[in-house]
Image 1 (cartoon, helix red, strand yellow):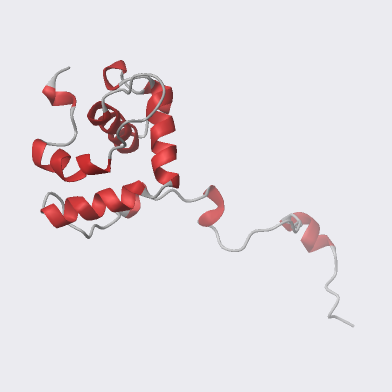
Image 2: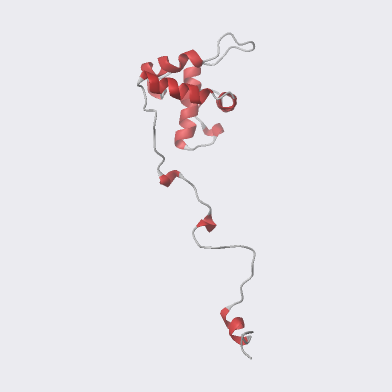
Length: 130
């Protein structure tokens, strides 16, 4: 596999490698560094899990490890280890261009209430007049 496909350099990988599970029963384990690079690729590019390049490994493995590690809160521990090693900063900012808003978020109050057209509203006399 080309070194250009890894998202973590050697220093960053050394910081999070102790968090990788060892001696697990079952089939032979895929390379954790490739799988993490696949997870980062999907999260960074926004593609579907099944559209992840084959060089990172099977998409089901990438998806399953992301979910399993999320449930175990391993990502938080890995980020803290990366910050302690100086490989990344421990604070980041979110750019609002990546936050999705609903289509109706722009225009004031919405809701199920029906509104009359201007021509129908003009035909009906106001109730406040005698």
